[in-house]
Image (cartoon, rainbow, N blue to C red; front, side):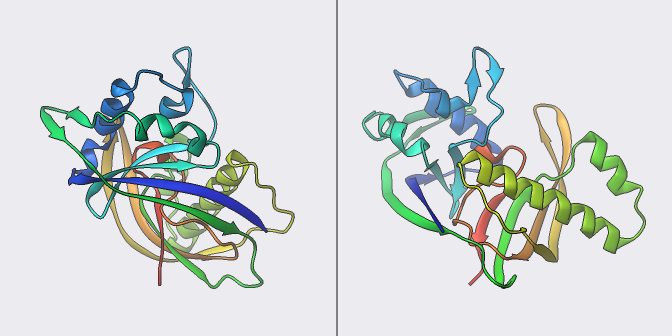
Length: 222
């Protein structure tokens, strides 16, 4: 069993989902010291690791989440005392509404009864999109998505330095919806799904592509 600390800074202003990347940019621009974990780049090159600081929309409000080592640098945001952000063409005077710090248990269970929902999950890139589209069977399509989701969760675990010995198992139980999404002029398909798995996962972490800007947000289904 592992303990993974997280912290969520929730602001008092509502934003649209499409505004999350602009919110991220505004937060980064407001900081005097721009730690790499805030923007996930090294000398204009992408840091190919799981993002430990993530920008989200939780209960419609803007939020920033620090995960693991991301907590160590998120104090820069807490001490900034300047939450005047230009998001797109709008100016937002924000205040911190709540700060929620928590240690999460990460452990495998004996069965796949842990039920989660993923919002705006982006599983398909150019190569597996073609494979997905050319698969006529819905069962086979779900199997493709399940394999990708297992890989996404394992990438998350690796990114927070957690190694599991036993096999990760999961089953997608429902595809709630899917819709086109464009990010940086790339057309993608976003899925809302429910799945069961044999591991405890933390509420509100991002899973998969663009996890740093509000995609693949995981919630626990009660």
